[in-house]
Image (cartoon, rainbow, N blue to C red; front, side, top):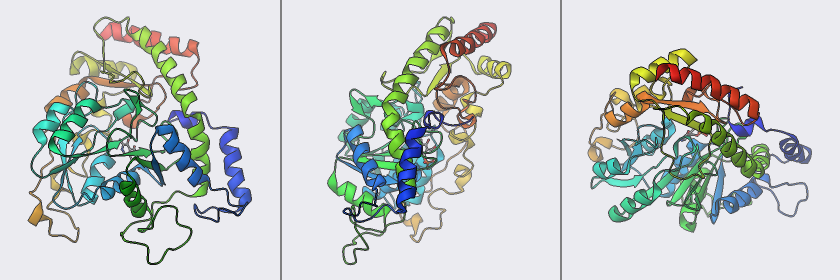
Length: 411
Ligand SMILES: Cc1ncc(COP(=O)(O)O)c(C=O)c1O
């Protein structure tokens, strides 16, 4: 079954929370606090999610994409602003910048498969407003260096934590290190409600703006339509009570999910470490999500040969998350200066070209990299094979033994 670890551990807890909502008949996130029938699952999820992350504020949303849009809107990023984002990420990290009428500037990754701080520095111009570090495949970015660069150049930091719900960097949960953080609860994520998302921040003003953007400009926790109290034009990205119910049950399972994944990944990695000449991606903090094990082969040729033998693909060829495969932005399709927004973008934006192989370091790493599932079974990430959160020790050993045998053949 394709999906993330949360989807593999659905059980009575999710059912109970959902039935609570269905029995109440209140599916909208707002209701009267003193009505015993109203179960306020979304509000409870927000409170518990913020507490879990160690953040002051949380807005529950309908998706990770919506969460990123709320973050950009909260920070006031718009026409003419450049935002630096890695070339290895999901399209939403880039498209949300375009949809905010700003300009994504693609940066290289390093062997952690997250944004390369050296390249961030090279890409900064006088138009740069923000950096979007993406904690890719559950691995926190090098946040010490990124925050130092942001401070030096007075830039905002939006953490894209969509693939890293619950990961920690130097004792802090990702999403609470920069100015604001976005999470996804889609089916491939650490915890899931099918779809859904969250935004966290410690800054009340950013919270108020993110909340307003997710709900037609309303102030946080409105009780009804607060005419006269809306200073902001927003959208509808609200989470409903059914999604809130599942999200809540999943959030309470997050520590168990992460402990299990970390133990199973360690078991799998220990076996593969016996193979001479095999590399692994750099992990920036051992408290990563451990949803995937990424191996690095010495050359593209060897990596392709391995792919053929095990019926999988290198990350370069696995689709979705590589800028070379994002036809939506390549060859000026949606790029700044060519969009249909109501502004005259060309007045502010120099045309930006995105083209195949514009990031040679990223290409080299992804040509040699292969994802093995530990908890995220997703062909789109090239991780349709490996283990899952429910794999037994015997199954893990068997998968490892098969891989070791093939690796020894190709290396
Ligand atoms: C890095 C990253 N950012 C953003 C998103 C968007 O999340 P959603 O699918 O919930 O909109 C995803 C989802 O795959 C993602 O992996």
